[in-house]
Each structure stands twice: as structure tokens, then as C-alpha cells.
Image (tube, rainbow, N blue to C red; front, side, top):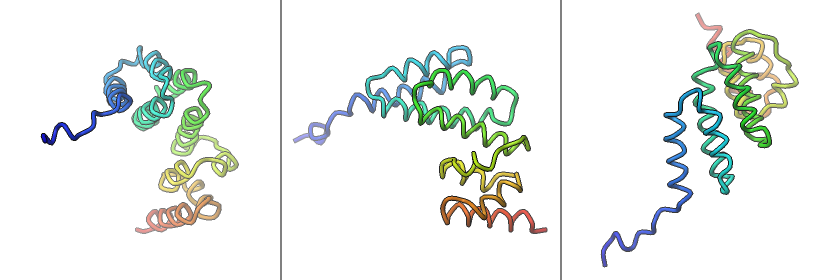
Length: 156
């Protein structure tokens, strides 16, 4: 028996997932929202949203320091308008951007945010956010990460 014969063929959604990630890495800014909308029309919503989430995280990390972030976030929020998980992630990226740019942010918004954002903010440059999370972070890991950041920031 040939080893190749015993391997199962890769599921179609796995191939589409890889193809979507590849397309998203190469998409132009002008075509990005349309491609995201097209992917989100895939019948396998878990796979489609996962691919788009990876893309949103990658692009937001690239863009959040610059001025292009805000218009990009609006376009992506519009593309993902009926998908709460994706729109929440975009909102959290915007909150992270506010924290890291010393813009106004609300403690309640940070408190209500996901563990993902709280951990990310616990290592950010904003002392107020870090101190807040050292005291009020949702998990022990978040509180400890924030305390470690405080110690590292206060070391000479």
C-alpha cells in the first residue's frame, strides 16, 4: 500500500483558508474591504472569520501607529458590520491605539475588554493603563504581566 493512498485529502475549507490568507497578504488597500466582504460571504463562517481575524490583527498592528489606521478601521468595521467578534476586535484595536497614543480612553472600556486586549495593554507604554490593569486586570496573568511591566519601566 502506498503511503500517499492512506493520507486523507485536505478538506476544502483548509485550502480556502490558506488561499484567503494569501490573498489578504497581497491585497491592495483599495481592494481590501471588498476582499474581506467576499471572504466573509463564505458558507463556512468559522473558517472565514478566522482568516479575516488574522488579517485584521496583522494589518492593525502595522497601521495602528500611523494616521492611516482610522480610515482603515472604519472600512473594516463596515465590512464586518454584522459580525460581533470581528467588530469587537476592531474596537479593541482602536482602544489599544488610544492607550498607546496617550489619547483619552475609558477605564470601563478597558475593564470590559477581552483578555487579549488586557494582556496587550499590560505591556504597552501607557503607565495609567498598566497601573489600572495591575490592580483590576481580569486574570492573575494580566495583573502579573502589568506588575512586571511596572517594575521594568521603573528600573534604571
